[in-house]
Image (cartoon, rainbow, N blue to C red; front, side, top):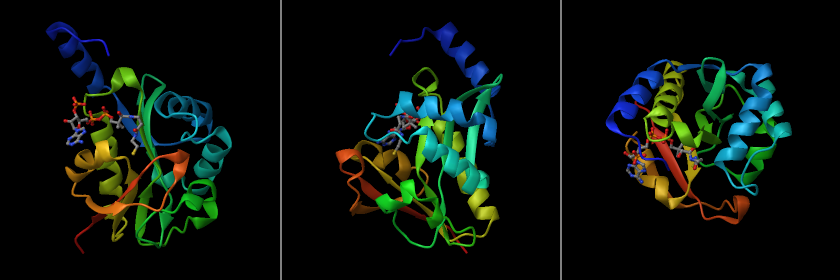
Length: 180
Ligand SMILES: CC(C)(COP(=O)(O)OP(=O)(O)OC[C@H]1O[C@@H](n2cnc3c(N)ncnc32)[C@H](O)[C@@H]1OP(=O)(O)O)[C@@H](O)C(=O)NCCC(=O)NCCS
């Protein structure tokens, strides 16, 4: 990663303020597929067909971070009636049930040159706020051990090793219970 000097850091911080978070649109399909391919190894990355299905099934649980027309990050996930994510859910949008109790997070991505400036945190806070407004019970996700501490800062609790074998990695189940 390039180390920024203090002038570059201020420039970057200012430009980060210009980033808007909005709901995904069908025309964002190629851009989100590319962001995913940059952020995840091939075995873990969702492909174009998955994103196409997700954008159709749950556009209101799919938010992108956009700077001057360029998608630099996103967060998305189905609404489900279970307290943990199962691997089948990633590929089958029929698990999405808008009236379900839990907002899942299938993916949180920020392209490398925009990382470490709080953008993933903004996307996560946006999803949590939307989920609260919708009166859901909470949010769920799976993550690798190195990100457990990151998600704990939002109030997620670690439920231990997940049954997920997604991409051949070890994942942890995390849950954020919202106050009624
Ligand atoms: C993970 C990811 C989304 C983070 O994006 P980001 O915009 O850099 O995140 P933020 O700047 O909002 O937050 C990062 C900060 O959280 C904190 N943080 C990170 N890991 C942490 C941990 N384990 N414990 C406590 N705090 C942690 C640190 O303060 C970190 O700041 P730093 O990056 O300057 O060290 C991004 O690196 C990414 O897209 N990675 C590839 C895809 C991926 O792994 N996604 C997560 C799927 S589970």
